[in-house]
Amino acid sequence: MREVLMPQRHLREAAADAARRTAPSGLGLDSIHVRHRMVQRLKQAGLQDERVLQALAEVPRHEFVDSALAIQAYEDTSLPIGHGQTISKPSVVGRMIAMLMGGAAAQQQGHLGKVLEIGTGCGYQAAVLARLAKQVVSIERLKPLHDKALSNLQSLQLSQIRLIYGDGRLGHGGSAPYESIIAAAGGEDLPAAWLAQLAPGGRLVAPMVAPGGRGQILVLVDHLVEAGISRYVRSEYEAVHFVPLKSGVL
Image (cartoon, rainbow, N blue to C red):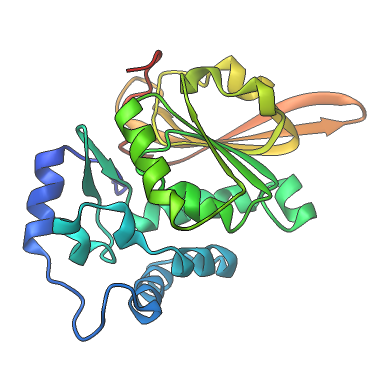
């Protein structure tokens, strides 16, 4: 049986898990050493891309969660961020970004290029992406979370991040095409707008309902162009559990 990655869980479950954890001992949360210890644990668990590990080490995750739960920020667990949502596990964030780094455009450029993120949440993943990308365009359909991400990211002064309040299923055509697209919500299909906005050589990674409708899996799509012919190559990976992908804004 494949392990199911659960980057986002019910608010009550995440809070209960956080209550069972203990704080990192001996170091302040703003210490780079605390983040490095988290990264070392992720590396031991199988995350090997040094560029992604470095990006994770640079982002102060505790600044993206509620203060009451900040002491749990560097454990590999999801935590509540309000509005029934949670911040994804560092291991899942790292896994999906590492998959993007393997795309043809990213390998050629040495970075993720222009990234479209579907589901800003609290802004944590956007902050990690910004350290590996030329530009990050991130869309959130829940206005309170969009506003929270704006506030969270302000102190980091990451000028390459652009936050959009809108319907993620539509992507953001005004800034397309994108060398990288990453989604934090899963639906029964990949919206046509995402594929249309994926640049040649680009790569998309997103959760999607598994064949047969049982659970979700990670899906990777490469936009290849060979002899002037454009095609999309899809690969399927491990089981995951993300919130449903929805249309509209709230």
